[in-house]
Length: 148
Image (cartoon, rainbow, N blue to C red; front, side, top):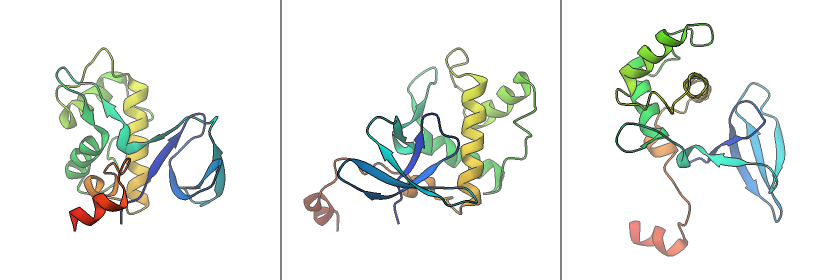
């Protein structure tokens, strides 16, 4: 089942799209509360499927990086204490996952956020990142029929 996993600016954590209204989205927090709330057009909402990270060549989709991380950690939470480790240790660990990341444009806070999101997804049983987070924008009924 393809889920739309969202990040909402100014709100911690990740959210799953539950429903769409006329003027808003209904999302559910992917944390212990499972709280549902409306999100409006004025909120900056980004699908994880639309996020990529800078490298020295081309930008790499977030789902690819998460899959690399999953493979390194054997589908378990991050073994590194990323919240308290030093910058050099954090970047060295991240280089094992994405060796050619752009060291000037990818900040420590970006790496920590990625690791935090990874742990949230793993805790929620979302491990097939390539399938769960593939882009669905622009897909219509006719496209889905052709794919079958």
